Each structure stands twice: as structure tokens, then as C-alpha cells.
Image 1 (cartoon, rainbow, N blue to C red):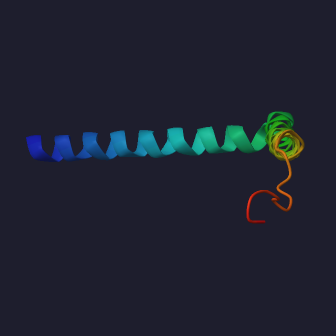
Image 2 (cartoon, rainbow, N blue to C red):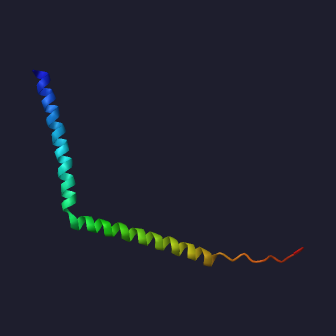
Length: 75
């Protein structure tokens, strides 16, 4: 009898955990403004990162002297 009670308690705990996960997932799905804000923020960060990378490469190209033909002894 004691084992049955422990098994039932374990099942109840498992069910509570699953229900908690389900409620959290439904809450996230229902929070459309929050999800949109997250999506816009992620896209903004991606664009900012690409622009920053492009600007760094451009800056390095301008700051690095161009290698031209070398003239000197024997050349």
C-alpha cells in the first residue's frame, strides 16, 4: 500500500511538472508583443553586427598601405 501511495505521488509530481511546462509555453505563445519585441531586437542586433564588421574591414583596408610593385636594389 505504501508503494502505491509513493507511485501515485510521483505521478502527481510528474503531472505538475508537465503542466508547469505547458503553462509556460502557452504564456509565451500568448505574449505576442513580447515575442515581436524579441524578434525585432534579434534582427537589429544582427544588422548592427554586420554593419560593424563591414565598417571594421573598410577601416582596415583604408589604414593598411596598399602593396605595390617594389623597386629597389636588384629590382
